Image (cartoon, rainbow, N blue to C red; front, side):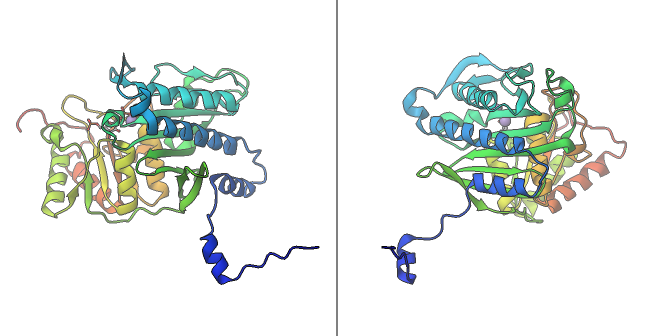
Length: 354
Ligand code: AHG
Ligand code: MN
Ligand code: MN
């Protein structure tokens, strides 16, 4: 006997709304638009999603499991490493090692290139395993940032610095995971920016923010105003304009969280050079490039002092750059002030007259 499954309107309501598109299905659909693609990049994105679920679990339990707190070591930048910095680094490296698509990794937490067990991998990844980790002990949002390149060195050999120093316009995938009140994966492969929210009960990232567009105008500015007196004249003038206009200051101190809010609501994130650190703090390969590409893909902008971040030539794996990213109109205004001040093209930092 055939069982008839017929649902009427009230039954459908009782079963709730459709749950939507999983990350996996989304990736498959994207891949099917490129018949020549063999699926390596898709698998790499799945590896990232898997590692981020594990990191998410560890973050959620860190206060109980002893993973909170400093590790007692410093990274290549001389910054104190948190235990979670190292845990996240290990999880992502292990995921790439098991995946087979990635031949080499540059991580904020290690000075040198990490070679995976797969020199046959076509891709290399630059990674900030845990961004904003100094927020971590107080249960404030943190993130992971990643940037993927197709390698230029021969597949089968060990990857080289040149694979990582191709420049931001050569990225083939980039994104971040935000571990906030909910966990989100936001990424681009060059066809717009899509955001997925993690449903812990299903263990799946679900498409929740398709084709994110950054509002062209914004009313939020995000920077560490404690360093105001060390910023150059044009940046100080811009911040004064923001204040005069009644913009809101919002600064979490985690690039991922500050960028994400401004991407959705409209605003500008600023990490300028300071008198002691002319290139600021944000790392080009695994913080600035991926966020700059996301900004541009969402109709926003991201500049260093005088040019789009994606056009900044990288000269070292852990190089830094000033960052001004977000709503097009805000970034353009700031760029105007910078170029007026700096017609000679020199990057000038105010020293002491403040
Ligand atoms: P990380 O934790 O990966 O070292 O990055 C921290 C960065 C960035 O997330 C944040 O915007 C910035 O540092 C905050 O720096 P300040 O404390 O100097 O404002
Ligand atoms: Mn970071
Ligand atoms: Mn970090």
